[in-house]
Image: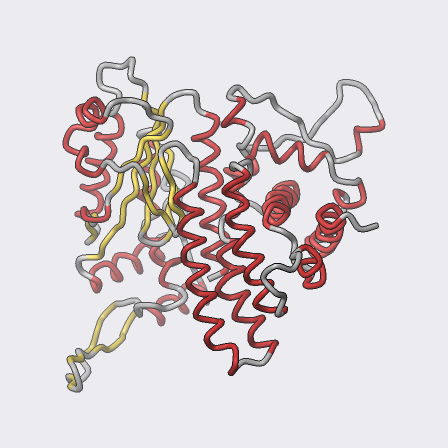
Length: 408
């Protein structure tokens, strides 16, 4: 689950980065892929794993030796049965297959979809994939006679590839959103043509609700609503819980929601951040037994909980550290550049980042490429120079804790 959350947040960060920094409209299309013939798909997947490496065909995997033997034994010579109610059929042989719900399923499915990436690249379409979820995004230039023609051509090729690989698009879950759009709905519908029925002002992708203006107010509302519901459920179970178990429940059902993709909340309106802070305050009162009208700041400090605003900053700086230490995807690494002065200065070895100028003051300042360098350069050198992620996280939390609670 942590791997999925990390990948989801990294993808959302890159997608939001494009949307905040582009001066033209951006079209995003969410798709879900369905398998039609599981056995045939598994057979093709095995063949793809068996293929030798080839520089001209970057989608092949080229497994060999013990690794290939392990995958082959995992994918082949399985058995299956059908269950209905209290009755089950006798088992029957299955030549190829991937157990549903297995840990390896998302990775194997991603390997199977490798050739799909080349189709997107051939059409110069940006994309992200996670298991059966695909998001593609494309700049919309309304000055062109057919602004979406490259996108439509790409989707035709994608459908053909899926058809020949025992897959299909789930049309019911296909969604289109246009970011930063003030165009009338009628004009948007005419531009999208047959895809207009999939147009939406908000989309949910990997658990995050994105709106066309990137205010994220609906995402915050969803987190707040679900969190307070979970807090009410936990409070009912309190008489039967030990303190340690109560703390685990709060972190599992509340803290995890506040932290999930929270780096996207950087620069949001203070009123939205305050709504999230009210959730954390309520969780702290429940855990500590603090009365409703008592000041909550000392309680948060005693629990060693960073307030929501500082948790967002923590996540941004953590990603920055990973980027500078080559522990992040390339599409995030490309967003930052080290500061290299034109002549020898003391700042040359300080690990500072270049601070680009934002072309869009309101939206652009929220983008990771502009916010991360500013936050990173404001850190003390001993934190920036941390040699491991563990020491960086420890020093960073101590630093932010002092800022949040004004301790010495």
